[in-house]
Length: 177
Image (cartoon, rainbow, N blue to C red; front, side, top):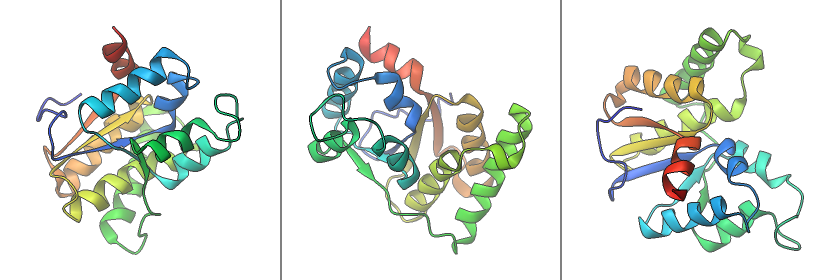
């Protein structure tokens, strides 16, 4: 993780991936509760790409009758769903392509096997930073290749020292210990 800025400050956009929520488990789980408390204590709203929402929204209703955990988090205000990326924005399309290439190269996977949600994390960060929605972005994912790729690619596309990767497993460990 880059240490260029303190992610617990007012002008940081937090973009989160599916793996963070999956690693937390059910709503009654202490990890899920700790994540919610962490966001509230630090006045953070975790922004998730639409693709991440789609992945999490299909989860079975195990925690709250009639509602998935991600919908409960959205209703409570500590998670927000980003609009679909503007694919006509050249920076957005470039960072998505470059992140896909980076992940494929570092993970020895074919580009067509790379999760679209991983590239959507970069798109949300690029769009929001480009629009002035935060001076910095902290991307939280459990996929190290994706996290490192997002930081590398966004740095090369005009967001140098404005993006950092936080390993979702490490965040959970920090907030639950």
